[in-house]
Length: 439
Image (cartoon, rainbow, N blue to C red):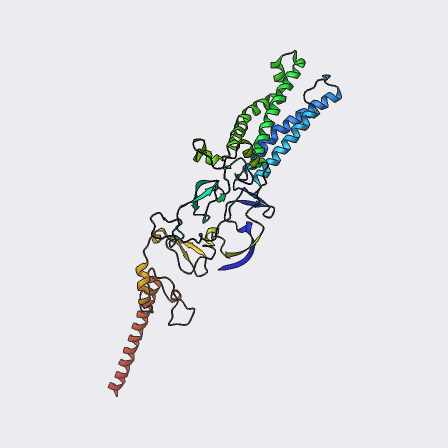
C-alpha cells in the first residue's frame, strides 16, 4: 500500500550515489576506495615528515654536527602543507556534485511525425511514444548531435554522458575515477586536476629530498653512497615508492594538461578524436586554461536537501525504480506476468515460478468472466482473484475456492453422509412396513 510522505531528495535519489552529512556530501558507490587513496598518499608523506623530525631532533641534542643538514624545518613545513592540500583536493573532488543532470519524471512533451521513418522507440517503458534517438543542436556555430537517455528520460546536454556506475547523466563528463570514487565532470574537474598535480609535485618533492638526504649523510658512512643507502632505509624506501608512483600520477597529470590545452574531456578524446577534426569547444590555449581554473563553477542543478513528496511502499523489498512511472505510482492491482511477479492480498511482491512467467493468459482473461464460479464447478487452475459483482462488495472468489484435494475429500464426506442417510431411510421404511404387516 502506497504511503505518500515528505522526504529529503537525497533519501529517495534514483542514482547509485551515497550521501553523508544530511545530503551535503555526495559520493559515488565506490567511496570506500577513497580511504585507500588517502592511505597511499598520507603514509609515505608522513613517513617523510617523521624522518625529518627525527633528523631535527638529533641535530638539536647534538648527536649530529652537520651545519648543512638537508631535512630541516623548511623541508618539513613544505611537505606538510603539500600533503594536507593534496588530501583536501581529493576530498573536494570526491564529495561534491560533479554536475548531475536532474532526471525527467516523464519524456519530453514534443510533437513528432509518428510516420517518419527516422523515428524509433526510445524507451520500452513508453510503448505509445516515439522520439528521435538523437537530436542536432548548434554549439558555437557547429552542429552537435545529442542523444536521448532512456534512464533519465531527457536529451543529454552537449558534452554530457551517462555514467553506468553512478547511474546519472553528468555535465561535461570526463570519466569515473575509481581512485576518487566519484564521477569527474563539470563541477569537480578543477579540483581533480589540482589533486593529481599536487600528488605529482609531492612525489617529486619526496623523491628529490630523499636522494639529497642519502647524499648528505654519506660523510657519516665514509663517503660511500651505498653504505649511506643501507643506513638511510626510510629514504631508500621512499625513493622506490615515489619513483613508481610518479609514473602513474605524473603521466595522468601530463595527459589532463594536454586535454585542458585542447579543451577536451577524456571521454571525447577516446570517442570523438578532436585532433582529427575541428573542436567546437576550443577557445585557444589561454582561454581553455582560464575556463578550467579561473571560471566560476556553476551551481548544482540538484538540491539534495529539498523536500519531495515520496510515494513509498510498506514492503521495503520494492526497488526505487518500481516506485514511479513517469512521476506517478505504478498500477499494482493486477499481477504482472511479464516481470515474473505477483501480488498477494496484502500488496507485497512474490516471485512467480519460471514456468508461469511466459504464460499467455489472454484466453484466461477472455473466458474467465463467462465461466461461472459456484460450488459445483471445479477450481480453475490459473484463475486470478476477482470481485464478484453478484455477491456483497469486498468478497473474493479466491476466498470461496478450494483446492482439488480439499474438494475431493469434501465430496467423499458428502457421499458417505448421503449413503448413511439413505440406509437409515431404508431401515425406517422397512420398520414402518413391518408394523403395517404385523398389524
